[in-house]
Each structure stands twice: as C-alpha cells, then as structure tokens.
Length: 275
Ligand SMILES: NC(=O)C1=CN([C@@H]2O[C@H](COP(=O)(O)OP(=O)(O)OC[C@H]3O[C@@H](n4cnc5c(N)ncnc54)[C@H](O)[C@@H]3O)[C@@H](O)[C@H]2O)C=CC1
Ligand SMILES: O=C([O-])CC(=O)C(=O)O
Image 1: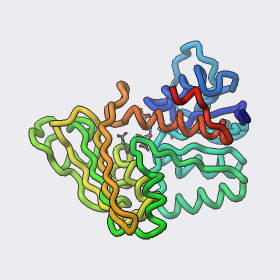
Image 2: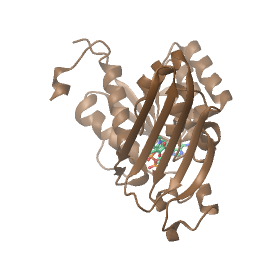
Image 3: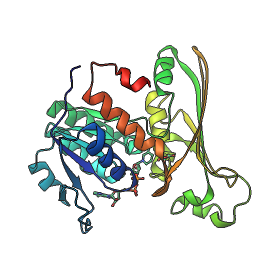
C-alpha cells in the first residue's frame, strides 16, 4: 500500500491532545519521524527522555522546515502560526476549528495554502456525522441545531461563569444560546465542534447552538439535529473526557490520529483496521 510519511512533524501545543498525538506518532503512526513542538513562549518542557526539538518562536520552527504540523494549541495559534506554516509548504492539521469562525482567519489560511501548495486539514474533533451533513447540504438544509452538554466544572474559565455558580449547579443550566459564529468565539476551548458543524453544514450564522452545564452527565455530550431536502439527521455522542483536560473529549485526540492515518495512507483501505 502506498504510504506518504513526512519525516519532520511538528506539534503546535503539547497539552492534553498534543501529548496523546505525540505518543500515537511515536508508537504507531510515524515511529521513524523526527518530532518537534512549538510551545508557549516562556514555557519549559521537562526532559522526559523523548527526542523532541522544542521551539518557542515560530521563526525557529519554520527554520526547522517541518513537512507536517499538528495544531492543538488554541485559536491564537491557528491565526498566527498556521498561515505561515502553510505558506512555507507545510501541511497543517487543525484541531482548534473554532478559529475558522473568523472570516479573516479563514481567508488567510486559504490564501496561504494556495501560495504554499499545502493542505489545511480540518478534523471532525469531538463530533461526528459531518460526512452526512456535508452531503445533505448539497440539496439544501432547512435547519441545523447543535446542543452541547458538559459537567458544570468543564465550563470553568469560560463566560458560563457569569451565568451561574458552576460549583452549585444542580439542574441542567443553559450557559449559551446563539449561533456557531458567536459560540466558537466565546467558547474557544469548548465549542470548536460548532465550527466543524457549521463548516460542514449550513454555515456559521445558520447553525443554532445551545450550550448546557449539566450535572446529570459525566461525559461531554454532543447532539446534532439537521433537517433538509435529504430528510433528517439526529446524532448523539457521549464522549469520555481526556484525563488531563475535562473540557476535551478523548474522541478529539482520536480524530487527529484518524486524520493522520488517512493523510499518511491516502490510497489504501486497511483490513487491519476492521478488526
Ligand atoms: N475540534 C474539537 O473538537 C476540539 C478542539 N480542541 C482544541 O484543541 C486545543 C487543545 O486542546 P487540549 O490539548 O485539550 O488543551 P490543553 O490546554 O491541554 O493544551 C493546550 C496546549 O497549547 C499550548 N499553547 C497555548 N498557546 C500556545 C502558543 N501560543 N504556542 C504554543 N503552544 C501554546 C498550552 O501551553 C498547552 O500546552 C483547544 O484549545 C481547542 O482549541 C479541544 C477539544 C475539542
Ligand atoms: O472536546 C469536546 O467535547 C468539545 C470541545 O471541547 C470543543 O468543541 O472545543
């Protein structure tokens, strides 16, 4: 089977998702590749014995000449680092999809990808069903509604804190009601999925979003309902959170692994995946 594995791979961000993806690259996906990480300026990375080039400046990472970068750092990194990497010919996997809610960021990425002949790869992250939504929209979507529920403390550090006392929430409490453009901007660490839904489906302004702090769930629950000429779609995911970050679903890290697997093996169907 044809494989195209880049030899120089950079992680943009080395938090809960970044560390999972790094382990998957080393253990399964690209054990022969050389890895680098872009970390927040001033952040020290403990020497855990892993061979990893660590950069805190984008220019230094660009000089390292990565062939593939995996963004799992946040919206600012998508806006600031991703266009420069694409322009330099480096394919970039994007996890912080909500950054694409900003039309300026979207067009900078499109323009840079064209100039560098490189691919931005937007992952499905913690949500699913986007293939069906993408197909359904071709005949016209009447409505798309996304509802996200997380345990109250998964909303810590977000505007939800102004809506309720998270530690004292005893009933499901709506912390946001609006559309995907507002949701992805206001909740950059909790509502990237709304941007993925918007991009696949009806667009940012026509994707209705409700976010709920729900003490009755112990998972990150994502519900999607769409109606259109095609019929109706209803999807519910109850995602286990990553142990290192309760805001983030394990599936988000796994979706990056799946996107990398597809990127490395574009022409193959892997029977080993079926078991
Ligand atoms: N598409 C989806 O479904 C999901 C997307 N995400 C996105 O992925 C991002 C990462 O998620 P986690 O790993 O759980 O978060 P995390 O908070 O555990 O890790 C983020 C890492 O990025 C680093 N970072 C922040 N600013 C940086 C900068 N300017 N340069 C380099 N590194 C920087 C932080 O130091 C931290 O190590 C989130 O911020 C969110 O935007 C998260 C969950 C789901
Ligand atoms: O990981 C999740 O469940 C969803 C999430 O945080 C996001 O969309 O930003």
